[in-house]
Image 1 (cartoon, rainbow, N blue to C red):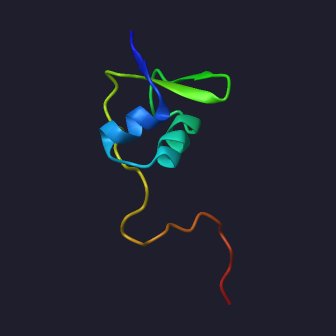
Image 2 (image 1 turned 30 degrees about the vertical axis):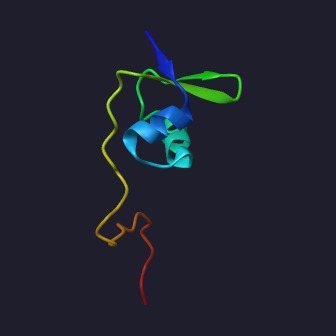
Length: 67
């Protein structure tokens, strides 16, 4: 299996290197491994779907009483 660096994967997927690092830290890229301080991403891995909130509406998780 061939692995790509964060920079190579960012160019291939068209997103920033920082976003790739965040996806790796959140375990959203299966098969990504950490070698020292850098990530190695399998070359056949597809780009994960964007799970960030796009509507601008955040769901409140705490149960505070409004007065």
